[in-house]
Length: 391
Image (tube, rainbow, N blue to C red; front, side, top):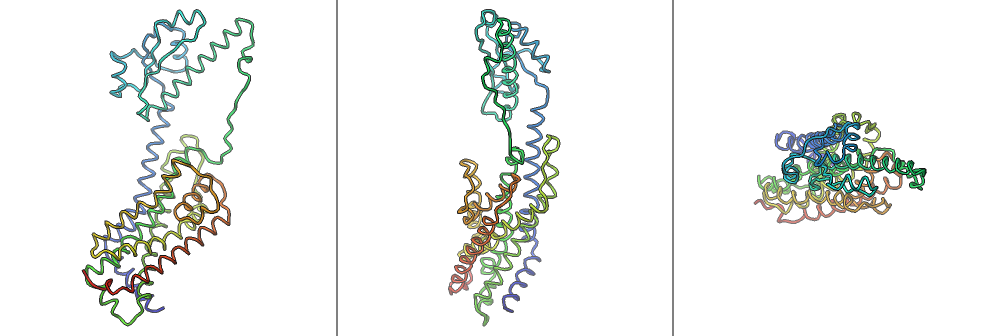
């Protein structure tokens, strides 16, 4: 085991001296990644909250045709504005988010007790205007319900007869849905942190050494190549674990920047939850180290290996995107699938639910078993004589 330890120390010491490796592995990925994600999500969330709470300013076409409706809207805090010269163009030019258009037949239909069609002009392709459109729809629905109730009372009919069902939505979830949506990319972010942390050392210890012509004399030593590889893989795994731990700490320390409390949402990732997340993602680190070492062993230069591994980084995002399009209930068998297991377990923790011990144990055990398989493949590849030939 002494050769393993010697190679491990050599790789760690050499890569800690390289500014490029340290910055890419331990700064850009684990530190800036979570911080940028939280800043972007926090800004997006803050903008949505402000749009949901700020007073509505609605241009109304034909406001003089519905004075009672306009007066009621003003009582609800809505600022009625004159319509633009071209309603459609104002929406397309993003000068207005929504415009109300009251038809000329409003007074006649209203007086006859017939339903009146009011148009809400908006551009559905603009997601940022969706909050305002929903607020306008809710206001008009309230006004219609109030007028309908008054009409029934005027005819001596209890308004409740038109509402045989009263539906009350009860959210039994432990965490606000907005938090779950905001943190849906956390599993991918952490897995990426582990991959990026291991990537640069995996490249440097294989393709990098071949390019520098230092791998051939290293493999020529009277030491089993399996032990040399073990030292390199342990060093790569160590960098991946450091990157993962830093990513978690960075996310924990930067999470107060999200304006959740301003929106009345009480949520906090506890240290116990963070420790559990670390255990969940940790089996990915040796797997990432072995997989990237295998891919990098086919490259003859640093840049070539980097281009290969950039494509490999797309694999962890597949479960995240798949579950966003087609959500699945967590099953025990999923805990044996790398990346999918991490996504399901971390999402469970974010929702405030407890993780089953069997699922956690299966995730860790299967992850380590898969890592050992890849380590065996990497060891077999290291026996090739062509690997020792410098570029």
